[in-house]
Amino acid sequence: PYRAVTHNKGIMNGIDSVVLATGNDFRAIEAGAHAYATKSGQYKSLTHCEIKDGIFRFWIEIPLALGTVGGLTSLHPMAKLSLGMLQR
Image (cartoon, rainbow, N blue to C red; front, top):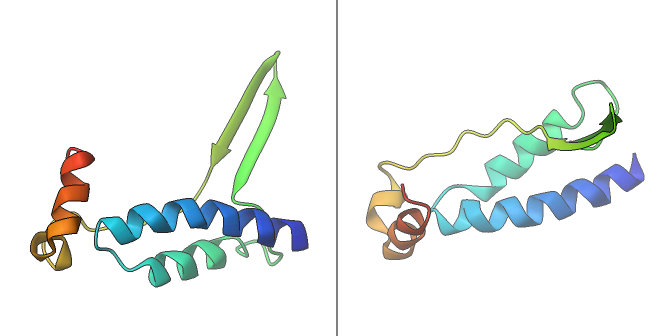
């Protein structure tokens, strides 16, 4: 579980930057992601990988609820710019 904490924090560093840039609440996203990592009763990694039939697969599972309309996203000029760059 200790390695998963460090690993998940690194993942969240990248996610948080996009969440902040788009005017969303990064603290809520962090809390939700870390809570999701404990859904089995033990803290686990948010990413998974496997080699199946000679094909390497890597994926991430995180439930996210983000806004792109209303609130700060429509008022803050940097949030507008960021959403424009994301074609939203």
